[in-house]
Length: 110
Image 1 (spheres, one colour):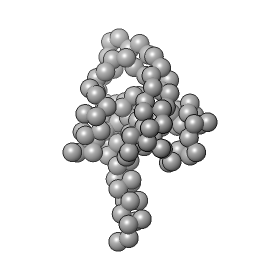
Image 2 (cartoon, rainbow, N blue to C red):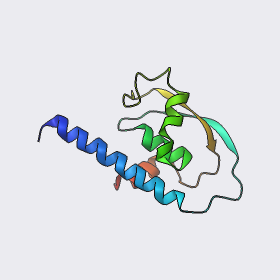
Image 3 (cartoon, helix red, strand yellow):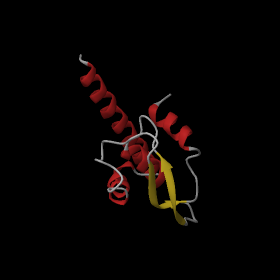
C-alpha cells in the first residue's frame, strides 16, 4: 500500500469514526437549556470539518455549516491549515463533550 493510499484510508476512517460518534450523540436527549454563541476554533494537525462539526454541533454531518461560514478563509473543505482560526456560528455553550482534546481522543479511540 502506498503512502497516499494509507493517508486516504486514515482520513476515511477518521471521518467514519466522527460520523459514528455524531450519530451516537444525536441519540441522546437534548439538554433542557441550549443557548448558542459564536466561538473560534484553531485548526490543529489532523482536524477535518466532520470532526469540528461533531464537537461543536454534536453532528459531523453539519460540516457544511462550518465550511459555509469559513469559505473565504479556506482553500477547500478538505484543505485545513494548522493554526488557521475558524469561526463556529451558533455553537452550544453547554459543553456536554468536555474539552476538544478529549473529544478528539474519544473519536479517534486513543
